[in-house]
Image (tube, rainbow, N blue to C red; front, side, top):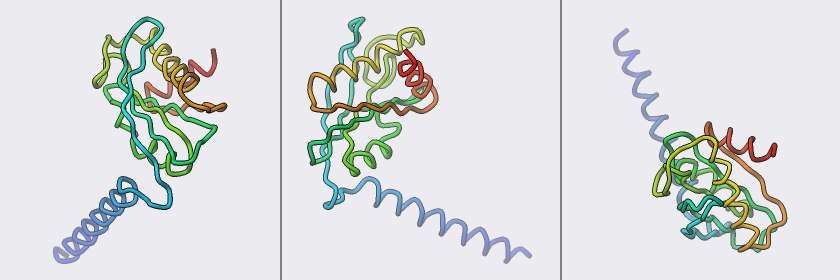
Amino acid sequence: MVNKKRTILLIGLILMTAGIISTVIFTYFPDPAHPYTITNVTLTTEDKVNLQAVVFAPANNTRCAVINSHGFSGNKRWNQHISIELAKRGILVVAFDARGHGASDGYLNRGDLQYDILAAVEYLQNNTNVNQIGLVGHSMGGMNSMSVAAS
Protein backbone atom coordinates (compact mmCIF):
# COMPACT_ATOMS: atom_id res chain seq x y z
CA MET A 1 0.00 0.00 0.00
CA VAL A 2 2.86 2.37 0.85
CA ASN A 3 4.60 1.62 -2.47
CA LYS A 4 1.37 2.35 -4.37
CA LYS A 5 1.05 5.74 -2.67
CA ARG A 6 4.68 6.55 -3.43
CA THR A 7 4.22 5.54 -7.07
CA ILE A 8 1.12 7.73 -7.42
CA LEU A 9 2.92 10.62 -5.72
CA LEU A 10 5.95 10.21 -8.00
CA ILE A 11 3.77 10.12 -11.13
CA GLY A 12 1.92 13.22 -9.92
CA LEU A 13 5.17 15.10 -9.32
CA ILE A 14 6.49 14.12 -12.76
CA LEU A 15 3.28 15.31 -14.46
CA MET A 16 3.26 18.55 -12.48
CA THR A 17 6.91 19.23 -13.36
CA ALA A 18 6.26 18.50 -17.04
CA GLY A 19 3.28 20.88 -16.98
CA ILE A 20 5.28 23.69 -15.41
CA ILE A 21 8.19 23.27 -17.81
CA SER A 22 5.92 23.21 -20.87
CA THR A 23 4.04 26.28 -19.66
CA VAL A 24 7.29 28.21 -19.31
CA ILE A 25 8.58 27.06 -22.70
CA PHE A 26 5.39 27.75 -24.65
CA THR A 27 4.46 31.01 -22.91
CA TYR A 28 7.62 32.90 -22.07
CA PHE A 29 10.03 31.93 -24.84
CA PRO A 30 9.79 33.88 -28.11
CA ASP A 31 7.88 32.26 -30.93
CA PRO A 32 9.54 33.20 -34.26
CA ALA A 33 6.24 32.65 -36.09
CA HIS A 34 4.45 35.18 -33.86
CA PRO A 35 6.91 37.95 -32.90
CA TYR A 36 6.08 40.79 -30.54
CA THR A 37 7.95 43.53 -28.70
CA ILE A 38 7.74 44.66 -25.08
CA THR A 39 8.07 48.35 -24.23
CA ASN A 40 7.92 50.06 -20.83
CA VAL A 41 5.89 53.27 -20.77
CA THR A 42 4.54 55.71 -18.19
CA LEU A 43 0.85 56.62 -18.23
CA THR A 44 -0.45 59.75 -16.54
CA THR A 45 -4.00 59.70 -15.22
CA GLU A 46 -6.51 62.54 -15.31
CA ASP A 47 -5.78 63.20 -11.62
CA LYS A 48 -2.00 63.35 -12.33
CA VAL A 49 -0.92 59.93 -10.99
CA ASN A 50 1.96 58.29 -12.90
CA LEU A 51 1.40 54.62 -13.69
CA GLN A 52 4.09 52.26 -14.91
CA ALA A 53 2.93 50.14 -17.84
CA VAL A 54 4.15 47.57 -20.33
CA VAL A 55 3.05 47.48 -23.96
CA PHE A 56 3.09 44.10 -25.72
CA ALA A 57 2.99 44.94 -29.43
CA PRO A 58 2.66 42.33 -32.17
CA ALA A 59 4.90 42.69 -35.22
CA ASN A 60 1.92 43.38 -37.47
CA ASN A 61 0.27 46.81 -37.34
CA THR A 62 -2.86 45.76 -35.49
CA ARG A 63 -6.10 47.72 -35.27
CA CYS A 64 -7.25 46.20 -31.96
CA ALA A 65 -5.94 46.37 -28.42
CA VAL A 66 -6.68 45.02 -24.96
CA ILE A 67 -6.04 46.70 -21.61
CA ASN A 68 -5.04 44.04 -19.07
CA SER A 69 -5.76 45.02 -15.43
CA HIS A 70 -4.37 43.05 -12.48
CA GLY A 71 -6.03 42.18 -9.20
CA PHE A 72 -5.55 43.59 -5.70
CA SER A 73 -1.91 43.55 -4.56
CA GLY A 74 -0.80 42.48 -8.05
CA ASN A 75 1.21 44.31 -10.69
CA LYS A 76 1.52 44.70 -14.47
CA ARG A 77 3.31 41.34 -14.79
CA TRP A 78 0.62 39.51 -12.79
CA ASN A 79 -1.26 38.32 -15.91
CA GLN A 80 1.71 38.51 -18.25
CA HIS A 81 0.90 35.12 -19.78
CA ILE A 82 -2.40 36.56 -21.05
CA SER A 83 -0.67 39.64 -22.47
CA ILE A 84 1.93 37.50 -24.24
CA GLU A 85 -0.63 35.15 -25.75
CA LEU A 86 -2.76 38.04 -27.02
CA ALA A 87 0.31 39.71 -28.56
CA LYS A 88 1.28 36.44 -30.23
CA ARG A 89 -2.20 36.41 -31.77
CA GLY A 90 -1.87 39.93 -33.17
CA ILE A 91 -3.50 41.99 -30.41
CA LEU A 92 -1.69 44.95 -28.84
CA VAL A 93 -1.83 44.82 -25.02
CA VAL A 94 -1.28 47.49 -22.38
CA ALA A 95 -0.77 46.13 -18.86
CA PHE A 96 -0.21 48.65 -16.06
CA ASP A 97 0.48 48.83 -12.34
CA ALA A 98 -2.67 50.28 -10.80
CA ARG A 99 -2.23 53.24 -8.48
CA GLY A 100 -0.64 52.18 -5.22
CA HIS A 101 0.59 48.91 -6.77
CA GLY A 102 3.91 47.82 -8.21
CA ALA A 103 6.05 50.73 -9.43
CA SER A 104 3.15 53.18 -9.87
CA ASP A 105 2.58 56.30 -7.82
CA GLY A 106 -0.48 57.13 -5.77
CA TYR A 107 -2.59 55.33 -3.22
CA LEU A 108 -5.26 52.73 -3.74
CA ASN A 109 -8.71 54.30 -3.78
CA ARG A 110 -11.48 52.30 -5.44
CA GLY A 111 -13.22 55.50 -6.49
CA ASP A 112 -10.21 56.57 -8.57
CA LEU A 113 -9.32 53.27 -10.23
CA GLN A 114 -11.28 54.09 -13.39
CA TYR A 115 -8.76 56.86 -14.09
CA ASP A 116 -6.08 54.18 -14.45
CA ILE A 117 -7.86 52.37 -17.28
CA LEU A 118 -8.83 55.67 -18.90
CA ALA A 119 -5.13 56.64 -18.93
CA ALA A 120 -4.39 53.43 -20.85
CA VAL A 121 -7.24 54.21 -23.28
CA GLU A 122 -5.81 57.70 -23.81
CA TYR A 123 -2.34 56.23 -24.42
CA LEU A 124 -3.74 53.90 -27.07
CA GLN A 125 -5.70 56.70 -28.75
CA ASN A 126 -2.68 59.03 -28.87
CA ASN A 127 0.12 56.56 -29.69
CA THR A 128 -1.34 53.77 -31.82
CA ASN A 129 -3.66 53.18 -34.77
CA VAL A 130 -6.10 50.94 -32.92
CA ASN A 131 -9.82 51.45 -33.44
CA GLN A 132 -11.07 48.70 -31.11
CA ILE A 133 -10.16 48.50 -27.43
CA GLY A 134 -11.13 45.63 -25.17
CA LEU A 135 -10.77 45.32 -21.41
CA VAL A 136 -9.71 42.27 -19.45
CA GLY A 137 -9.02 42.07 -15.74
CA HIS A 138 -8.67 39.81 -12.75
CA SER A 139 -10.48 40.47 -9.45
CA MET A 140 -10.01 44.19 -8.71
CA GLY A 141 -8.96 44.72 -12.33
CA GLY A 142 -12.07 42.92 -13.59
CA MET A 143 -14.32 45.05 -11.37
CA ASN A 144 -12.56 48.18 -12.58
CA SER A 145 -12.86 47.06 -16.22
CA MET A 146 -16.60 46.46 -15.87
CA SER A 147 -17.05 49.83 -14.18
CA VAL A 148 -15.28 51.65 -17.02
CA ALA A 149 -17.12 49.67 -19.71
CA ALA A 150 -20.47 50.52 -18.10
CA SER A 151 -19.77 54.26 -17.96
